[in-house]
Structure formats: structure tokens, C-alpha cells
Length: 603
Image 1 (tube, rainbow, N blue to C red):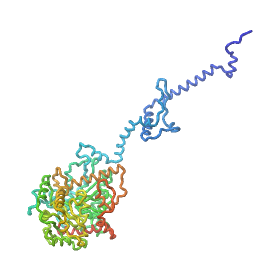
Image 2: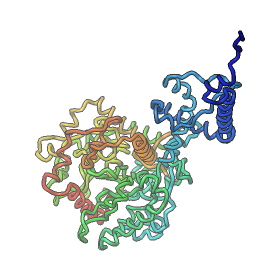
Image 3: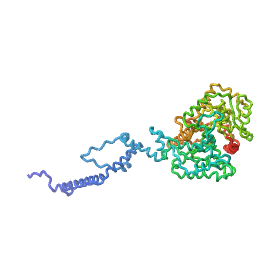
Image 4: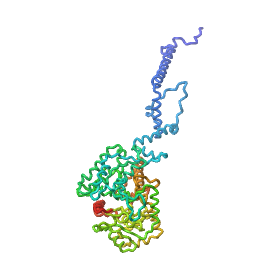
């Protein structure tokens, strides 16, 4: 018997393999596998490896962005949009173990932090005033956060007016008042009431040039507007309108204002904040710049009603209680010290004076104004043995003599300061300069006007007697003032004397060293206003509930307060509205009447 072979015969292999040898099938499969891996390796080395940085950067950006925003990693179809990682090679470490989203975010924190450091740069690009804000962070720079950029206006807006100074007023030759950088001629001391230096015959409407010349001495001027905390516009607005208030049509009265606005709006500095960082000064009351209509008979110019001017801040000697684009600064007095010692000596002198009169009044009645209380004040002063009266309505009265006025104020404990032709009068600052405690009868005469320069708590330095109490003859001024305790009077007088530096303008040709004068106080306030506005813009804070007609209330708010409500002084500022008229119409009429006083040469 023949034994069967151990290995299958070729015939058997052909049957099991479908007619093909097994070795051929294995070779075919091996070839396909080899070609597949060759293609894979070719794809990796020839395509993916050519741009490793770009691929890594793209993947990194996606991971960083998602880590920063704390978005979930993509899944499903979203993952297929990301670059594919090459297959691992035998020489490479094993692929990383899958991690949670929290671990990915933690790993990417350094990169995310680097991106966040770039964020302020993007904010600065959005807000061109960001660089100016950052100057305040440089503690080694004494001017950080205090730089002022001054526009170089064509001379027709300022210097040309001074060259034609004889035309600045219909009634007065202003040329003599332009001497000594706007201080006027030096005063002689016939009454022995002035100190040895610093006293000048200053016109009450000369703040334009005094402030402008003080600005030239400001220690933090800059030619780089990008670091400026505010932008000054040296337009002599008060001198401009004073030339044309009588006998000129509205086109002439508005010409320089319209020209100025056009000039400013074409400057790159204007585009930074649309003019909201700009300010200018006018040494007249606000009503000279608030013409209500286009009627030729209406008063003043429309400077403060121009859309562009509404963005700017205008410093005037009397502001509007119902508008937010003007701010009150003191009238100029006769005293302009050149150094701190001059102020200290004057303050000591005012402390040591004997004051024989309980109260005094310098002024004229207003018989044509039925609402004026001046007649009653004069009557009460005449009938009192402790009141000194200086009447100003009889020809060449002594009211025109600075030394006579100052002598009376220096001899009085209290000085009556009713409304002038408008809310305010220069006399209030002359009396405070003399150390005399002012007595006001309307909050518009000081309390809502000079909030930058005077304490908001008016009881610290003044007495308030409502006009209505005088008008109805329910108040005796003498009895009211006598009822104040002597210690309280002493403290009030000391407060007034301490306020003297803040309400006077130093000599423009010099600068006080440690004291802040009215100019310094005003500049600080403007910078604070603009800086707060810029920070509010960046923070997205917008006071949507602001009511402009209540501007006088907002000026009385303490820092941090933003809302206003009913106020005890509402009746003083709402009566014109109740009569159906514009609240500024009566004040504009008062401004027109004030020129009658100028015509008579009175201050």
C-alpha cells in the first residue's frame, strides 16, 4: 500500500485557492499594503512637512482662541475642519492621551495672557485720546495728565482785536485796560487801602486777555496734541461780541463765531472727540452769546447755540443755569499778585482790620425792574446805624473809585450782594478780596455759578437771605446778621480770607509758586471734566437720564453722585418757565440792560 503524501498536492491547492496559488495572493496583498504606506509617508513628508509652522500656528490660534473664550473643543464634523496630524512613526513618542477642556485651557493660559496684553493696544487704536490718559500713569512726569495743547489761531481771532482796542467797546476806550497784559494801568493808593504792589485798574470784562496771557505761562503746554488732557482755543470771544452788540446786524455778530467753528472742525485735533476736549474763555456773561432767534432786534450772538460749540466748554463770568456747555469763573478784581508772599501779606492785613460797620452796600436802585430788591436794601441800609451805604446813581459817584469801594468793604463785616442787571456782579469778588462776608439773595448770584472756586456748602463763607423775604418786608437784614454768633462770624471771615487766592488772577507775567489762583483752579477743573468724560467713554458709561435744563442741579452734586431730584432752589430757576417763556429770555434782556451801566462808565 502506498502512503499518502504529507503536503497537499498542487491539484488540491488549486481547488482550495479558486484556481490560484496561495503565494501569489499573499504577494498581491503585500504589494498593496506597501503602496498604501508609501503614499501615506509621501503625503506626510512631501506635503504636510513643507509648512509645519503655518499648520502649527493655525492649530495654535484655534486652540488659544477657544481657550481664551472658553468655548468647547469642536466635535464630529467640526473636527474635520482642523488640520490632520500625521501618523506616528516608530521613532516618535506615542500620541498624547486625550485631555479635558479644563486641562487645555490651563495649558494655553500663557498664550492667552500674551494676547490679553495686546488688548490695550487695540483699545488705544479705537480711542485716540488713550495716550493722553496714560501720561498720568507716569509718576516721574510732573505734567502727566496735565498737558494742554493750544491752537495757533489766525490773529483775526485774538491779537488783531487788541491792535484795534479802541473799537472793543462802544462806550469805553479799552486800550488803557489792555496794558500790562490785560491788567490795566497801576492804581495809585489815595485811600491807603492797597498793598505796595499788584494793584491795577482792571476792567471787569478783560478776562479774555488775562486768561490768554496766563496760559502762555502755563508750565505744561505741549505741541503734541495726542498727549494733551485738554485743548485751549485762544479766541477772544468777549472782545469779539463787545464790538458789535450795538448797531450791527446778526450776520456781523455771528461772523467770527461761524468762522472759528469752520476753522476748528478742519483740524485733526477736533476729530479726536468732536470738540468735547476743547475749551475757550469769554470775559462776558453767557447771555451775550445766546441769541434765541434770527431777529435783528434780538440780543447777542448765537455762539453757544452752534452745534459744534455745544461740544466745547466755554468759561464765562456768568453761566446759564439751564445749559451745560458753559461754566462760571470769577470776574477779575483789582489785585494781581506776582508772588505768594504778596498774597500772604494781604491776607494777614485783612485778618487784622477793625470793621466798624456790621454791613454795607454799594450800588444803584433799579426802578425800572419791579422784581429788583435793591430799593429795599438801600432803604434798610439808610435806616440802620450799623450800615454803610455807597450810592452809585448820582453822576460821578465814588463807586467809580476802586480805593473808595475797597475801603468800605474792608471796614465791614458783611457786604450785601443782590443781583446785578443779571444774576452776578463783580462787586461780590471785590468784597471777598477785602475779607468781607458776602450776603446773597439769589442762588444764581454765586452758589450755582462758581462751583469750581467756592465751597458747595455756602454757609461756610456767606449768608443767604431769599429775595422773597426782602420783597415782602418780612426780613430785617440788621436783625438777621446780628443774630449770627460772633464765633461763627469769625470762622466765616477766615473762610473768606482763605478763599482769596482762588478768586483772583495772578499777574500773567509771573506765576504763584504754592498757591492756586482762579486760572489754576479753572484749568484743573477743565482737565478733570475732560478726563472723566474720556474714562466714561472707554467704560461705556453714558448718563442717559441727564436733563440739561437741570444743569444747575448737577453742578451742586458731590463726587460720585449722578442723579438729581427736587431742590429747595427750584422756585428761583423755574418761574420764567411757568410764565410760558424761555428761561433765558429774561436774562438776555438783563444783559441788554447791563450795557446801560457800561454806558455810564460804572462797574
